[in-house]
Length: 284
Length: 319
Image (cartoon, rainbow over all chains, first blue to last red; front, top):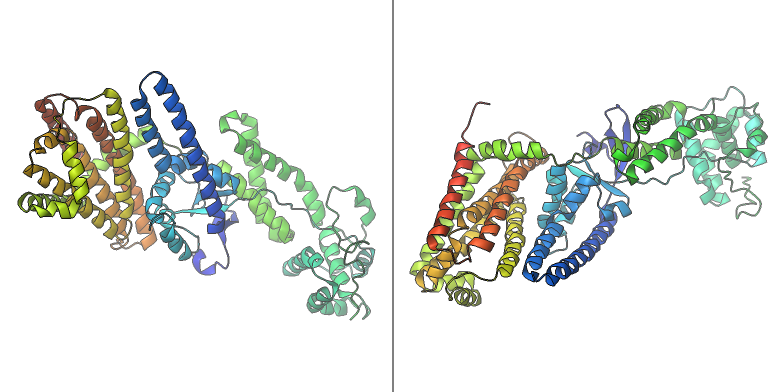
């Protein structure tokens, strides 16, 4: 695995059979613990419900001992195979994992098979040592880059975060000044991919910064751009970057931005009147 | 074409893929019409292509993140977990596992350690009176002596089924724990084996010295072959896990561990089946009033089955 040395954070890259590389975030202990606790609570509830049911049914027909024995077998199954069965039939998830939006996968991104699902849950017996607080599992998880406890290491599995509520919409700039500046950028301007990425990252985050901070950040990229475009010295660098972003991502010079007012895209702009940064205007 | 136009043209497809993902997640695959499945896979491929071209399209980071999630989510539904397959399991249990065990050094080691310690501990307990008390503890001995003082003459069938359930719960639990402790570089497995063997040996040795012993042997004869073999098997399976970390056979430690885990799980399955049979015998036949000969022939029969399993099924064949 070459990913080990390149990995900076909890992102793991996976290459699919379609030969596409996509990324997952590995789930750490603070996401797995609530999932575990939810599952534990569920097991307790299921056990007591099943036990009461068995007692009632077999107690009435006078076979309480048989019911009790079945209850013990039921307990055994819940204690050792609850996770394994759920992860097999729910594609790597237990109810707790589903609630916490995490999923067990093989390290190569393939789904787990029944053997892996059962084994990684049986090996909880060693992970939870000493006593029941998962110290060994935590220790093992701290020592590798996938937060794999011993059971995960033995089965070649990992737990990844699977979020599904994320918006992909492009942030729009609706500040008229920025759009005017976008119009002044020469038609020959073509942002390279790194520049485009930097512009997108800036526009995405600028609403979290006060104006002074924006000016400070925008200066590094904005000053060379201002020089290159031959714009006057008092041009707001923050808005210039917004304009460049607008040109790169939203519309060409000739397009009329008003045409798109009915578009379903989110109209995000922090410079609207009434927003805390409404007066933001950096004049260095 | 600008990014916003591009997104607008792709949006419908992504939304549809999301909807289909949700559909697959919320119900079983069988509930999906064939067209939806085909549509799902073509949309998935389209999303993969979009992600691959994300750099060329100069998509903003937020969109790329969204695509990573969308592709990941669809990928997990397209390539789902493989379930239990009875046919392959039968093949593994009846063909692969016995052959593997026949030439398994871990099993030989576990076998020797278990029976060595067992016999030693039994001999010690038989010859020196204080030994069993030190190993087992006074209270447990008293309790056992009391348990086995009445003659075995059958009991309430209700109690039988309760005890069978208890043995399943308790004994298979011991076996699984013994197995997973093996992961600690084999030391955990060795410890568990020695512990179990010395405890059991001391019980057997001690029971040989007291009058209640006759009842005790009457009780344990029938299920002993399955139960003791199952314990040895679980210890061996655990040791294989642990020793793979030491003798990696040229692989990285992680890969060696994964390979050993894949091999030892079917062994553990065989051990669990033996535990299960032992628990049923222990629950129903052992405490019954049946004569000693019935129980002894049960022991011979199960020992014969085990021999058949290990030797006849396990004898190396050129496949």
